[in-house]
Image (cartoon, rainbow, N blue to C red; front, side, top):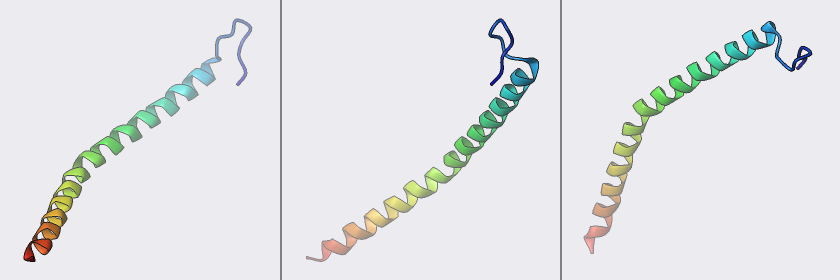
Length: 60
């Protein structure tokens, strides 16, 4: 990463960093939304399987 004399990044570097940051934040928000939508299904499925296991061993 090249910088100017004063240690400040060039305008192109600033623009590139902001662009990469925007992409990262957009993907992070997408991942959080997906996890929020998928997690209830996972927990429901886990509850159903746990109930089936309990019912199976109740025969004795």
